[in-house]
Image (cartoon, rainbow, N blue to C red; front, side):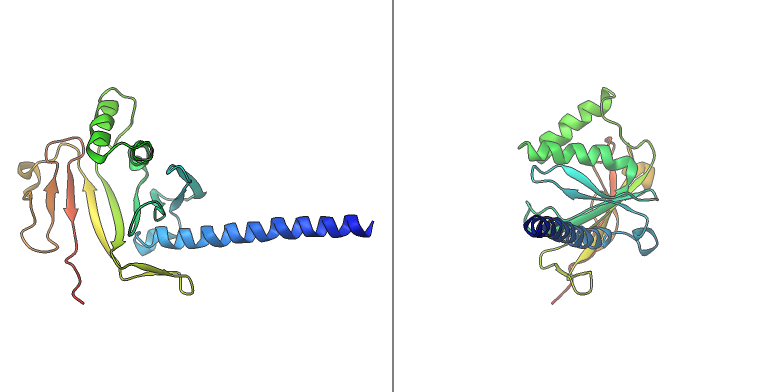
Length: 198
């Protein structure tokens, strides 16, 4: 009886410890992911983390229109992103293709074909993506904050051009908005903050 009880206690302790470790890891992953989001949207955002194969798994179900992803441990540097949920199929598909070894441009070309055939949904209006990044970025577990990082903004407007937006194809000054992939399905406005001086 005593031996059985001890074994049961050991198993429960082991499972509890594993659960706590997972919860702790998820908590830090959530903090890192939502660091890219506007303050008023952080609490209600859905959060996805990475599986070992590079695909995404849901960590927290949200209540608003924003989806955030944790830093990808398989990539150098630090980068988390938050975006409107209509972008999730497109971004998730890109993660899968990259995990399979496909490079960026090939992935875009294939996803374009899938969108045109109706296999892959994409935004029909406008959608924004917030990306927190930094060459020297680090996460402070004590405070739950990402340090030494910046946020750039990507605003998808399918088919947009310099003529339809009044924006140039390169920034007029550091931090100024400009349009990329003009006229394409993934036309987007970029706002990249100036590099911070040390």
